[in-house]
Image (tube, rainbow, N blue to C red; front, side, top):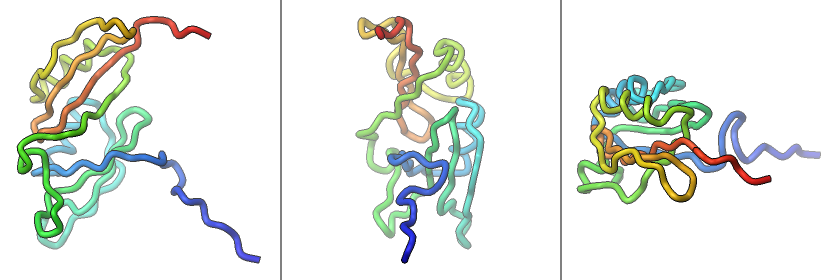
Length: 142
C-alpha cells in the first residue's frame, strides 16, 4: 500500500504570489523595512542573482526572485508596470502606510475610508509592485 503525499508543502497556502524583482536582495530589505517582513529562505545563484526567496508578511507567504530574462521572467520595471496588485489586511493601515512611504514606496491612491467597509490605500514599491493596504473598519455581520 502506498501513501499519498500532501499536494501542498507544510505551512504553505495553496496560492502564493511569486514576485519578479529587479534587485531581489534590495526588495527583500525593502519589504522588511516597509512591511515588517521576515525572510524565510534565500537561494543565491552562482552569478549572484537571487534564484528563489521566501518572505512572510504577517501570515502571508510571498516568493520572489531576481529577473531571469533568459526564461522570460521579468519584473514590472522591465515590463512597464504590473497587472497584479497585492492586497494586505493590517491592524493599522495609517501606520503601515507611513512606514512604507518612509521606506521608499510611492502613493498610488491615498488612504480613504471606502463604502465597502475598509480604510485603504494603494502604494507602488520601489520595484514596481502595487500594494493595497487595508484595515477593515466595519464589524462583520454574523
